[in-house]
Length: 181
Figure 1 (cartoon, rainbow, N blue to C red):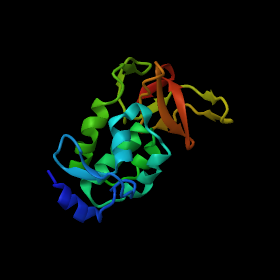
Figure 2 (spheres, rainbow, N blue to C red):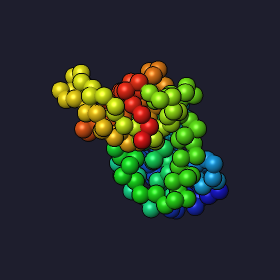
Figure 3 (spheres, helix red, strand yellow):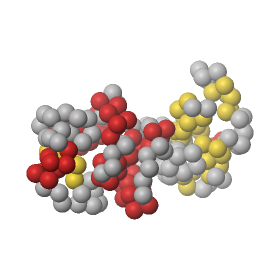
Figure 4 (cartoon, rainbow, N blue to C red):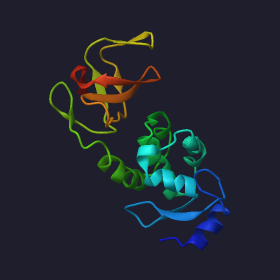
């Protein structure tokens, strides 16, 4: 594991996620022993995922481009937790980094089992196909049959639904109108 002294030198004495210099400490990016230097605000948010402030993590728009694998992996995981697949899809991860990043993303997704219209188990990150034209209330468009929704997330608060982007808009879709791609 990186020592705090090494991380301070690497980061220039600032949080590797948001750039703050207040209350810095080492955060280990599991399951590896690589560490990231984070401020007390970032660390508190990461350790209490139920009360994450999405506005604070706008900083991930910058940290996701880091050349440091642990920073990229942590940014990827946080973007997935926040439901920002639009940004997490843009991160370039080497194969080994992708495996590392997905190690906890997939295991931390909803414990409820979500199945498509054919009874196939769906997981966060899967792609699905819409099997029926669906009117999207409030968005003013119809999600057309045959549309592929990539990198879905499984919301823990809404049963029988997935979350994904259609026409650039994040929406909830009932799984009875989807099949795994």
